[in-house]
Amino acid sequence: MNVSTTQLAAIRYFAGQYGRFWKMRLRRFWWSGQDESLPNGALLRQIRNEFGPVWLDSFVLTGDKSTDAEDQQQAKLIVERVASIMEASLSPWEQSAAKEWIYTTCSKDEYTVRVGVSTGGAISINGSPHTMDGKRIIKNNHLFELTLLEKMKMKKVS
Image 1 (cartoon, rainbow, N blue to C red):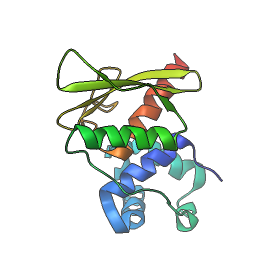
Image 2 (cartoon, rainbow, N blue to C red):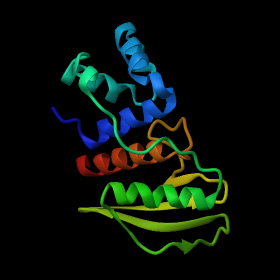
Image 3 (cartoon, rainbow, N blue to C red):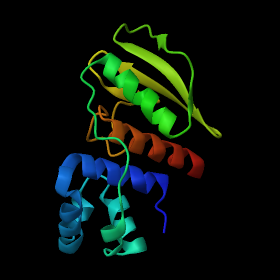
Image 4 (cartoon, one colour):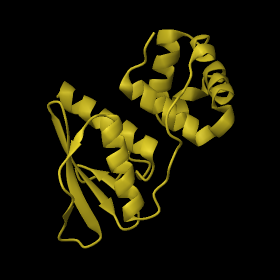
């Protein structure tokens, strides 16, 4: 059974937030029904419903650790690494009129989004530095990957 790229990004983000014992924490959230209140809780619930809680025992999460951006250079590296993982292409970085931001265009298949990084380490997608729920600022590799996939998925539906 394979999880979708969006589901995998949600798992990566959760694991990055909860560390070494993330599977145990996720099981507790699933068991108590509190997973719905989590960021990306709907995706985590979808995984539980689709694959069952026992599936988590055999699931192995590979890949990079959670990385937070503290400045523009780190945010830029996060964007470039996530684009590489997703096999997406990036245009050359351009300075914006606002000196705090630089921008690139990220393209994957038929989807294109404008990505910016600020001197403070925030990452924006199509002008918004917030996650889809509007509650968090994107400054983390897993959160950027998840939000990027969600925005591309949303674009596909519309």
